[in-house]
Structure formats: structure tokens, C-alpha cells
Image (cartoon, rainbow, N blue to C red; front, side):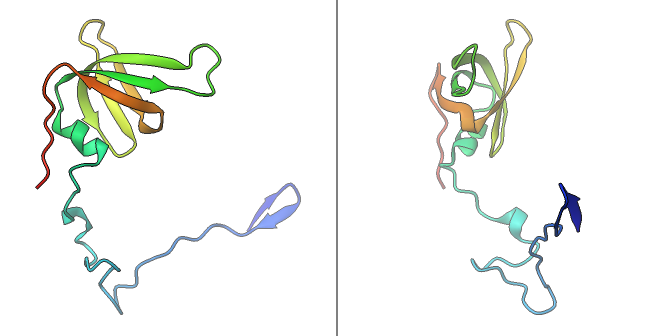
Length: 117
């Protein structure tokens, strides 16, 4: 238990998988197979990942910012994850880590690789 401002709160608990009784998840995958699950190619992070190395303009909005609310980041896609995009600007050497929640859209200078299997 944690004492916060005179009140006691129980530590959070997280669900666990009991492999002794059932190895299957609801969707039919077994424990240990999660890394081998098929990926839906239309998710934005997968589309961005398929276009790694391409020059882009990422249009980003920060609704709570006082100085600027909208910004454009230019450069090449280095990495893309579920919640982030990493862009490198070769002109000035800057690297940008952009959270997907702020990303409005991405503009490409060339054809997009979009593959769905």
C-alpha cells in the first residue's frame, strides 16, 4: 500500500497469463506466438516503415502550445513505431522524434510504398 496525502492506495496489479491451464489467447494465438502475429499493413506506422529512407514533410499540430501550434518537419524517415516517427533532416543534421498523437499528415515527394498482403 502507498500513503499519498494521508490516504492509502493499493499498488496497481496487472493481469498475467496462466500457462499451466490455457496457452491460448482469445484470438487463437498461443503464448510465445505474439511476435509472429501477422501485421496489418494499413496501419500508419507500417506504411511509414515501408517508406523508410524517403523524403517527407510531416505536418504536426500541438494544440496546447503557446508559441506555435502547427509545425512542419522535413527530412527522411529513419524509423516509425506504433506511437512515434523519427525523421532526420540531412540539410541541418537535426533528428526529430515526433509522437503520432500530434501528427496530422505526411507529404511524400515520391510514390508511396503501400503493400497489403
